Length: 474
Image (cartoon, rainbow, N blue to C red):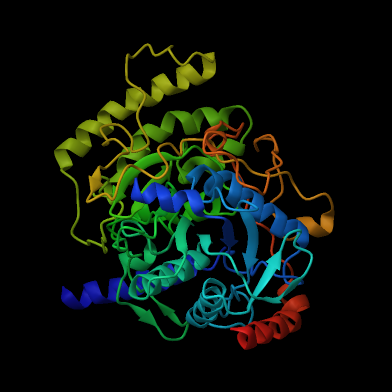
C-alpha cells in the first residue's frame, strides 16, 4: 500500500508540474504603501520585447483593478500607487521552449531580481507606460508585491526571506492563483516532491507568521476549481481531479473575473475565494445554443456535490494542508445531499428558463459555492493579526478592454460577448472608500480564454538575450 501511494504521489506531482506552466498596527503599514511591484505568470516576463506594451498594460490594469486597489494595501505615499513591472524569466522547460530554463531556475532568477528591487539595488524593471525595459534602482520605502501563478511562488519565497531578515521599509503582498496557498496550492498538496527532469520542487506553503508590529500583510485570492491554488485534497478523487484540470482552462487565465468572497484569516494573511457558478466540467455545454446553458444549470447541483467530495472546505485556507489520500466525506450525508441536489437542479433550470429566481416549484434552496449541503465559504480566523484585509474585498474583478490591434492580441486575452464592460483603471490608488466602489463585471464564471502565446521559435533568441541581461542585473 505504501509503494502504491508513493507511485500515485509521483504521478500526481508530474501532473501538478504541468499545471504550473500556464500561464491599528496593521493599518499604519497599509496607509504608507506607495509602489506596486507587478510580476507575471509563466511565459509572461512583463518585459519588452518579450511581451508587448499592450499586454503589460492589460495585465497591470487587471491586477490593479481586481486585487491591488481593492486590497487597500497600496494607498498613500507620493505619488501614490506607482506601478512597476518587475521582470522575471517566467520560463518552464520544455513548455516555453527547448532552450528555456527549468521552473526552479526561472523562479530563482526572478527571486534575485525582486530581492534587488526591494533592497535598493539596481534591478530589471519596466516602468509605465511600459514601452521599454531597463535596469534601475528603486528608492521607495514601501511596496506592495503582486504575484500571479509562477510569480506568486517568487513573492512567497521573498516573504520568507523578509521574515528572516526584516526590511527597513514596509512590504505587503497580494497573491492571485498562488501555487503555495496553504490549503489548496498545488505546491503544498504534494510538498516534498521534486521532479529533477523538469526542475520542479514542491516547496510547501507560503508562510503567514511575519513579526508584529509591522507584519508583511498579505491578501491571497483564488478562483474556485483553479488547480494551481484550489487543488482537491484527495488526489484519488478522479472526478474532482478532472474538474480541476478542466478548471485550468476557465479559472486560471490572466483576466479572470468574479466577485471575491471572504474565505478566512490566518495570522498575517486574509484569504478570498472567487466562486464559479458553473462547474468547469459543464462549461463546454454552455456554448451550445439554447439547450446547453439550461442543461449545465440543471446538472450543476448534483455534479457539484460529487466534485466537492474531493475537498474539505472546513479547513482554514491558511492552514498548510498536504494531500490526504484517505479523505472521504460521510457517504450517507453525501448521498442525501446528492438526492436533494436533483430537484435543486430542476428548480435552477425553471428559474433560468422563466427568468425569475424566485420561481422554484420544488421549493429547494439555491446552493452556495460548495453545493447542496456544503459549508459556508467563510472558514473562520486562526490567530488573526487584526480585522480582514481589507474589511471588504467583495467588489467584482474587472477585465480591461481587448487590445486594439491583431498583433497585440497574440499576447493578451480576447474579449468575448460575456466579458465585463471595459474599465480604464487609474494607476494611482484611489481613496480606501473609492477602492470599494463596485465595478461592472461579468459573472464569476464568465469565459476568459488563456492569452495566446507568441510564437516560441520567433522569440527564443530575444528571450535568451534578455534573460542573460536580467541575470547580470540580478
